[in-house]
Image 1 (cartoon, rainbow, N blue to C red):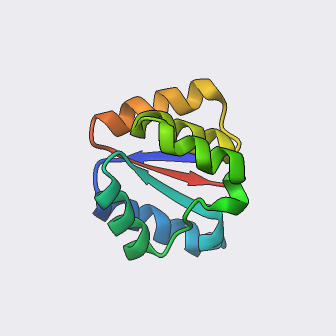
Image 2 (cartoon, rainbow, N blue to C red):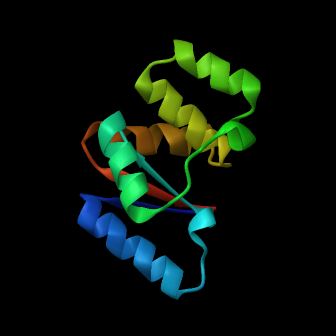
Image 3 (cartoon, rainbow, N blue to C red):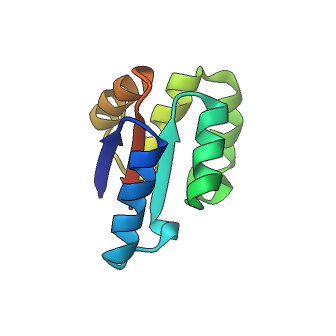
Length: 104
């Protein structure tokens, strides 16, 4: 599993294009941003994966309703296989307005 931290959507798009050129599928790429609207916009724009019921499971999906955005993002990253420590570290990057890309 590999992660990338970038400053903006332009850099995120460049990284995603590079990963595609290396042979990775967009089904293997997840994009995270702290702001929900920004996250949705970037995910739609780059055509990367949304974390859904398949990845989270029904119980986590329900529990996310009661979590803060930060906790929700960290839980989603651990669902993909990142350690709790790495998810917290990346969560701090998200708090600073950066974009996180996870290659699974």
